[in-house]
Image (tube, rainbow, N blue to C red; front, top):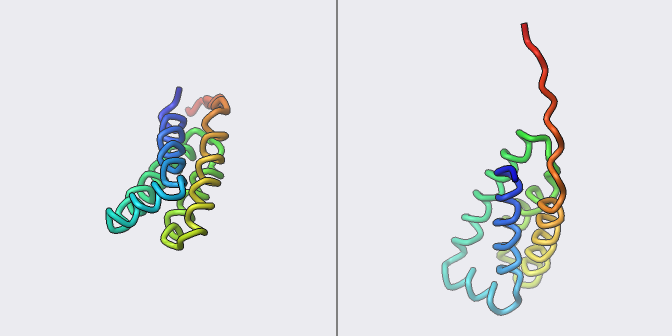
Length: 104
C-alpha cells in the first residue's frame, strides 16, 4: 500500500472522528480549533502524495475545504462526514500503476 493510501485512511479516520456530532465539536472547541489546522496540513500532505502517484484527489481537496469551513457548527459536522466518506472511498481503490518511461 502506497503512502498516499495510508494517509487517506488516516485522514479519513480523523475526519470521521471530528464528524461525530458532540464529540467532534468538543474536540475542536476544547483545543481552540487547532485540530482544523492540523487536518489542513495533513490534507495538503496527502494531496501532494496522491498527486505523485496520479491518484484520486477528491477526498483531500474536500478535506482542505472542510478544514477552512469546519468552524461553522452544523456545516463543519456535515463537511467532516463527507470528507471522511470520500477519503475512505479513495483509499479503498487500488493505486494506478505508474508508467515508467525511458530517458536518454
